[in-house]
Length: 159
Image 1 (spheres, rainbow, N blue to C red):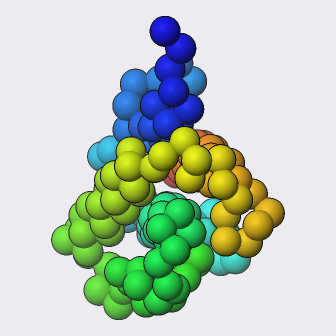
Image 2 (cartoon, one colour):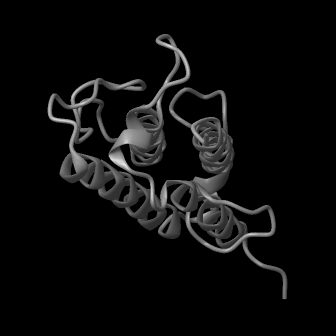
């Protein structure tokens, strides 16, 4: 029996974020073992670091969830949007909290997707440009894009 679109989208979200996948490292996997120093390192003053990428991906999981539910803007658990400012105290505890925050946002998005009907999946988003299923697919691709960036940033830091 063929899998439903919702089941496929959930698998895609999970394989991009934290489940075993044929393509290699997931977003959560790319963050495993990253130290505060690694998270804060940037190759150039005008480039993003791993910590910023972590919060950026959390924000877009929230943004897609908000679009799927019709939730109003402004309910994200951190100040700002898209590219957020880092907290003033940049220690191991704050880093762990922000990685946990990303995992929380993934779980919240996943729960919303799991409850969507086929009709809601094929409906257009509030912007009318994309179908809801395309937003979900896009957030998984976004995770993988930034997982690759994080892997590259880690590699650039090696002596």
